[in-house]
Length: 353
Image (cartoon, rainbow, N blue to C red):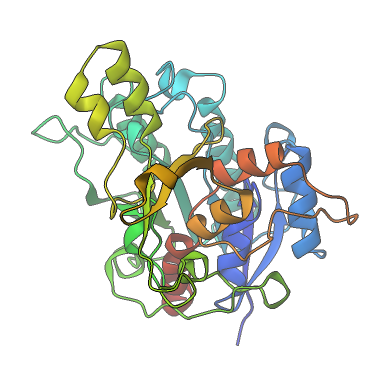
């Protein structure tokens, strides 16, 4: 059987390579500029070639791969940013990924890559008066894509143009994995098939996800149940955990919205708000009937790894056995892709190819 290979742009801490390797796909190279994420990825994938700055990569001169993945910078697209859109200095790096794909396809006479996967925030649907997502689709298809009649981009859809088959879909991390994660993390995932009409099969067909151990040594995704306190261990006490919605708390306090502020304290079964690179993730904890003995604390890096479906300790140590600082870990995890969502797509690609 032909080996299926993958290249990861804006690689971060190697989530797409991790997901790919679990479905028999070989990660070949990666591009990243942040020091700590590079060190983390090198530890877990010592044979992975590191290409460095994406702006200096020529797609026609690097090893061709079947799959190119990229979660391009979202800072200018995010609803909590300045909303410069794809014209922003960071999110405009999207076009370098498109350039690399085109250069590789030109150099290989259209043979590589076969599949491209793009991930980004929900704000990409609405930034620049909703024209940025139109630009994304047109960049992949190299043809004009009309705006939807409603003027609003659907959370799932497909287009075809110039022999490119494209599907996109919003995946929320809290509905994925075994067991499911408890973090609300909605992201756009787009699959482009340059070699056929398999994007719909990859992104919409049900794929059975595998179960993996929780430890890093076995490259497994952690079980969120491992972090829950069992009733036996707490002598039948019932633990109550309520994640804070920090952004909502701040905005409602500013607007003096009392009911909104109270609601930002969350309910017992609420999922955690989306983990962000520059935000403190806090929650309250007490045992039922013992509210006055409760306390508030920040999520640990290990707990953040669990919420992302990462193997426990994935971000703790670099390739030279150096400890990664908590600050660098929080930032790297907040910028990462939820592992079960990446696994779902890689399972589909492995099956389709």
